[in-house]
Image (tube, rainbow, N blue to C red):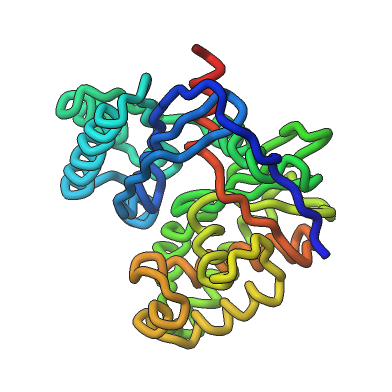
Amino acid sequence: MPPTGGLPAKILTVQRIFAAADIGSNTAHLLVAATDGEIVMRIDNFNEWIPLGEVVARHREIPKELASNLVSAVKEFKRLANAKQAEQLYVFATEGMRMARNHAEIVQLIRRETGVSVEIISAKREAELSFLGVGLDSRNLRADVMFEVGGGSLQIGVIKDQKLSNQESLPLGTGRIIAESGLTSPCPTYAYEAAVRYIESTLDRSECIFDANFGVASGGVGRGLWRALHPDGEKVLAREEVEYMLWCTRRQPIERLVSRFNVKVKRAGTLLPGALIYASLMRRFDLDQLAISEFGLREGAILEMAKQK
């Protein structure tokens, strides 16, 4: 049986409300939550699918249409944060924005149109915030490695003594893989093999790979696989389940995947590249199973804001 963990039931004693939003490589996502600095209680969520990872991987910049979508999303973030009386709204951006050559122009546009400053965070800070958030439900799992896969990058965190001892960012995101290989569902052999070669050659450059005892995954791609494979809510994915997802998504059209796995069309498009990445990670780290955390970047940012005040 897999280890179990998480925090014991606790009443939120001092309720302070914060809002954190990350502009990722697949979505722009806001969380409004109450916290006492130790636990986080979600109040409201809002997200919009904005595929920066794939688009920027193809064109190296954020086009006007996606820039307009980002402005609209941040306006809504600000409105919701104010409506829920959040003390602070922190908006940050990750790999999709980091790799865009016009990211400074986009940040200025958002600031001018919304009055909200967006911080483009480093890969190291991204891993640190994810680790802080993942601890909300995974601190007792004794995991020694953490993964976060997005649309533009993969974060690997090495955990020792319940601390993040090392981290690494690799250009392995679902959108980037689609752009590099032409991956589709169903998928022609040439595109599938191109995606596999890209993933394997990128992981060959990793300095963090080792035989792990237990791993935990965070982020939308991992949670997307989990929700598709586990409508029962069990928070552990077996390697065989990820391999099944590979088999199915390689052969079935998107509309069949939507029906079979009860996911939205855009999320269905990330199942194949996401399964490819996680299957490769589980083989490389010799993991038979992987815990899925329901928390991550945004919750980590909420906890950080509470502790800084």
